[in-house]
Amino acid sequence: SSARAQALVFVFAMLCSRTIRAILRPCRLVVFDKDGTLLDDAKTWAPVIEQLGARLASRVDPAQLYELLGYEPRTQHFGSRSVFMTATNNEIAEILAAKFDAEMAREFRRFFKELPPSAGCG
Image (tube, rainbow, N blue to C red):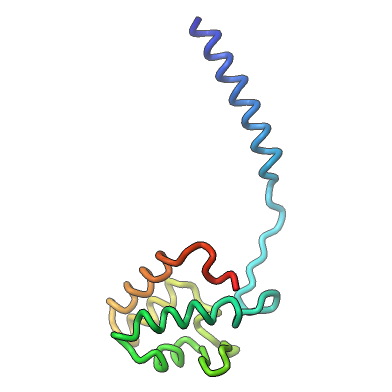
């Protein structure tokens, strides 16, 4: 009957819900480390910013981009006031638009959307 089917669906949903809750325990702490206190920023982000430089090279000299974003490619380190390490992606896009043009900002956003999930994992 319809009532029995609904009851079975309800029981199944409750069992699944309990199983999911058991597997996915509530998060009690989230840590953001944008300044490199916990993670090695150079190892994590140097390859990403160098890929960005290569991708934008037809529009801007990578050295100019790195200087603007606070990255030193010879040592593969970020300056203490690196925009790349301290600003959000939207803020970086706005900086690129102001310094270069809106297309540069759009290309920056596309670049980050296309990165694989493992990018920036060192």
